[in-house]
Amino acid sequence: MKIVPTRIGVSFLSRRRETSASPATSAGTNTNNTPAQLHLGNGPSGRSSTLVPDGHAGADATCWPELYLPTSALASDGTAGRRPTGVRGRRPWRKLLYIKQEYPDDYVDETFLMELQKNTNVRMYDYSIVVMQTAVVTQHISSIMVFIAVFISLYRGSLTGQVLLWCSSVSTLFGFVFWDLLNMYLRTPEQRIVRFKLIKGAVLFALLLFGLSPILRTLTEDTSSDTIWAMTVIFFCVNLAFHDYSTGNLTNIRFPGSVSLNAAVLGSVLLASQLNSNLSVFAFLAFALKWFALFPIFRRYLKRISAAASMAMAIVLALVAAAMFLYISRAIAMLHVFITLFITFGCPLWLIWVQRYKNEMHGPWDEARPIVHHYYL
Image (tube, rainbow, N blue to C red):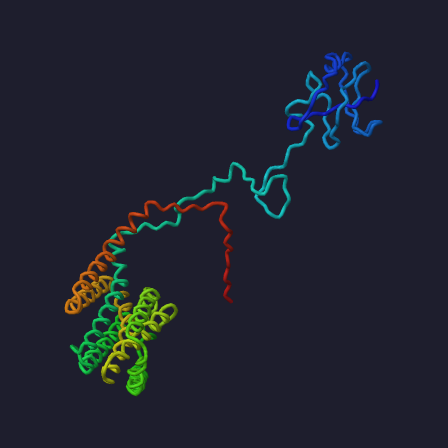
């Protein structure tokens, strides 16, 4: 027997056959029925060699030192079979990032989509409930329209500052009484108003505002009216966009509600600077602070106790705003009615219609969410 180099072929490796090899040589038949063995060493030429019987020479070709196949896996033509028994397969893929595996980074197996979940957190809405929820939006839009109508009446002289001051004071007193009744109904003594401190702060603030009225009236004398109207529109748009439409905040003003309140106050100061008398400026700014600071909290209390009462408040405000603008501009009054109807009845229907096209998918590609355990001593 002699040692000859033998080429070891694998199905996924390119191989070439020697055209000069004879059929008898390439057959490699063992007449002695003695199984050939693989020599794990290197031959004289530095290649891995195989022991074959005398008189049978393998084709000289390039060997692969890292792959070792027994010649029993060779086919009848001297080449390796499709799935050699001596080659160790790759380890199963594991979904772990901290170990190095014999797979590309974007590899996934057939179980990847087994954890796919669709629309697990999708909430189906009821039309009547969504209509009730739109009341907070229509209430605030109508309140802005009422406020602008009050300013236009003061600016034209159809409403005096004294009448406005009396009306706002009476409505504020009625609101405080109703607020106390709501606190007694909700049984929340920690949210009750401390009457003495409230009255003291209101009196000091009213005196300060009355003293600053002459300064505020002449604040924008050198500014053109067009600039003031444009800035007022911008401030009230900011007020509408950043208003706190939630119902959880019942005692104070937080972000982004504070941005909305500041924008409303700035817009009110700009409008008050266009009035003629100091009393009108004082009455208008006092009404603005009550309308944009206290009235939203009152509306949240009303919604908390009854959704029907909140819807009734929205209807009343919309009718009052439309009635006040009928004497100013009928086009604006009709536009306000159309916007109110669209927000109240059209937008909920639109939301429910587009909900059927929602396709929310969750699966193994989502980021992991840690579970935080709180331990209390």
